[in-house]
Length: 101
Image (tube, rainbow, N blue to C red; front, side, top):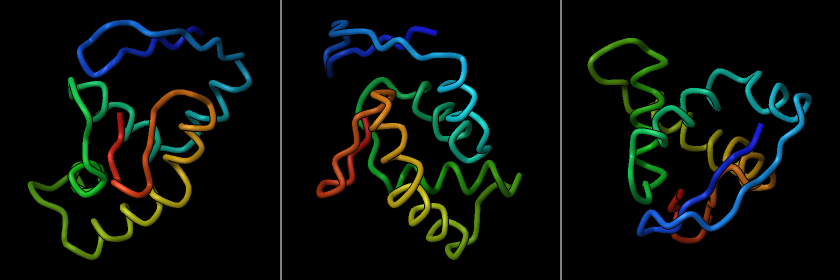
């Protein structure tokens, strides 16, 4: 699988080749799959809080997730899921600004 990256203006800047094993490892977790789905719908950078809110809402299958679920999602995304995806060059994540590209 090839993952194409684009710059903030939509210009393609490179591709990352993922093995089947890498792809399966990254997509085993439902929260990562939801996060990638959310990010694929957004043209520009997304703040961690916005991503966590959307992920928690989809996980709870309600109109709006409760604040504790959003906080748990943000912590898991920040410490686990986004660093894994960034290490595989699927997303760019700046932990200081909490922006995901």
